[in-house]
Amino acid sequence: MNICQSCGMPMEKEELYGKNKDGSVNKEYCIYCYPNGEFNKPDETFEEMVETCVPFMMKEGYTEEQAREYLNNNLRNLKRWA
Ligand SMILES: [Zn+2]
Image (cartoon, rainbow, N blue to C red):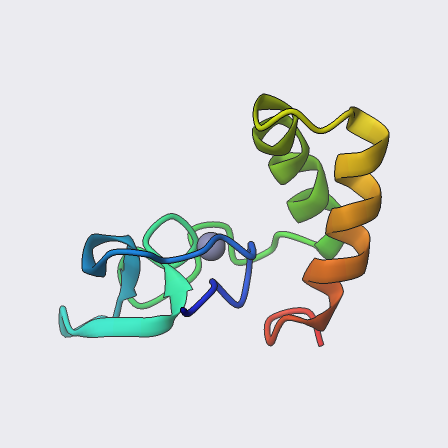
């Protein structure tokens, strides 16, 4: 399964893939990060991305500390942040 190379979200369905400028599917990034050929927030830093993702992980049952540690370790390896 592909995961978004920006936010780490698993892209389980075609609808979750990002879109290139010409409307074709971009399989590296999700629709939230890469909706139309460029990043939703092009100036976003790694730290900001972690903060954006923490509340979503807390909804999945992680504590804030666990979420932050997980994201710091895992998002770091993604193409956008490497
Ligand atoms: Zn994403």
